[in-house]
Amino acid sequence: MTNQTNVSEDLARRLLDGLVHGAPDSVRALFSGPADIDDPFAGRQIDGGFERLVRNWGPAKLATIKSTTLDHLTVGAKGRFCGAEFTLILDKNGQKQHVNLVAVLELAGSKILKSRLYYRRARIDGVQHVRNRILDEPQNIEKFFPVLEKYQTALSAGDAEAQAATFAPDGRFDGHGEHRDLAKGLGMGIYEGREAIRTVLVQMFGIIDDSAGKARVGANLEKLNIFADERTAVLEFNIIDPNHPTNRVHAGVAAYEIDQQGLIKEARVYDEAW
Image 1: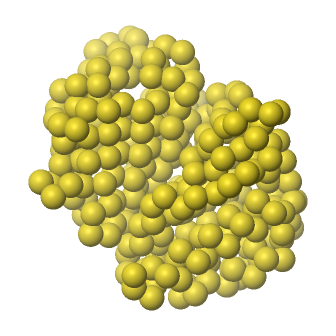
Image 2 (image 1 turned 120 degrees about the vertical axis):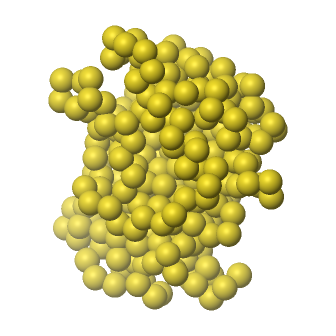
């Protein structure tokens, strides 16, 4: 690991540990200025509201957190951003539940400037939510891996075949939802292999087309932050629904891991749109 990777990992682990244990002073010490956290339950909180957020953090307040594991860490933009992907194991009323969480950190050396947390609230409170806009202006836009340009083009065009073709034959799509059937309204689950991915994309685009009342609408994605290391790109985005009366926005983040053949080995998507 490089020194910046070590620093980023340490900050991400300590941030999550402070939230799990409800320790505002420990969390505040990680920031170079005002503590700045955007959370699915509490929204964006800076200093004053931040202390309430930490003491009453949704996953720890509504369940008991038994363990946290850092699964993936992506540091990009010369150390200015990192995406830390965690798995939390919860005890919710005696039932085991897991929550996948991404902490996107904006960094200044050994301190955090801002942090944005992404996870599916429905895993905790049992209700499907829409995460409203988090970012308004692009933060850092790097050139995608070539296969991700094809992926995004197909996504915008509503082309399930072309989008599925960007995955390795044994590729994996993890939407961190609770069901493989989108008609259940519980989010996209895990799909193994290109054919399974193609099948769910056909269903997803069908739902979008039905909502719009016309075919091949695709997903209107607003890219707001892209950073990458040698094999993984992290994208913070808004999905904008032009067919909704208020142009509804779904905010989220995705991590795309690329294999040695230049295809998508795994797409890990964290939003609440499906």
